[in-house]
Amino acid sequence: MAGDRRMSERRRERLRRTVVVLLTIVAVSGATAYAVRHGDQTRPDSSPRTAMTVDVTPAPRSTTPVDEAGASGFAPVVTDRIPAPTTSIALSAPVSGTTNMQPAAAAAFKAAFAGARAAGLSPQIKSAWRSERYQQVLFDRAVTKYGSRAEATRWVLPPLASAHVKGYAVDVRPENVAAWLEDHGARYGVCRAYDNEWWHFEYLATDVCPARKPDAAG
Image (cartoon, rainbow, N blue to C red; front, top):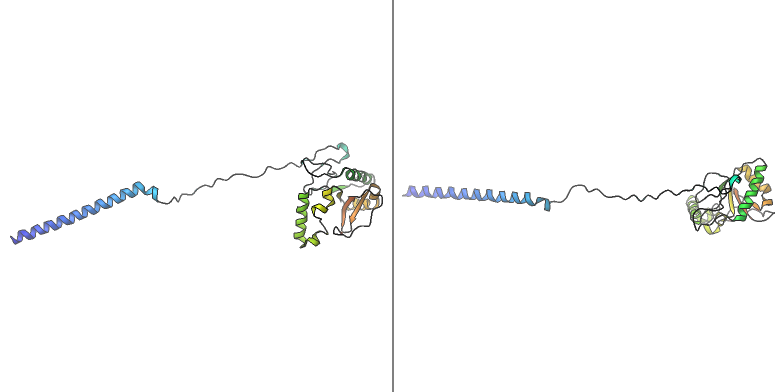
């Protein structure tokens, strides 16, 4: 009897162990199946995302001169930037609302340049009319270069004070043309304005040029 009882207990122990093992296998299998089925919903998305970019580069603006003066060589040009030397005077610009060179000043410089050419010279214009916006850019650059507004105004005036913006000034090239204009410009009403800028001439509507200022700051 005692032997049968011990055998029965061993069988029951093996049966319990078998049941525990089976239950463990079932639990692990179920958890694995759930993870496989739902894993994509819970794991973070580590795949790279491609950012969408939009090209906002502005289209280039044409600055091609409009030839309205024919053989005279004084076609209108936009001088919103300092261009390469040219024989053109900014009489008008294809941008509405901009300020242009004054007609009387343009006519005076045209006559003066004709006189210079008759003397065997080749007058060029480095810069004539400028927009207020671009004049401000030049002034800001001068402040950065020279370290102060006071020093900058010796070379570049703010927009509201600039004869370029007002349409009365022309920067000429080369230097021998500037020298000729110093000697003969008054008969056309064209005068050199500053001691420190041999290239800068203004229309003053006078046959006698006033004494030059030392610089633009006066």
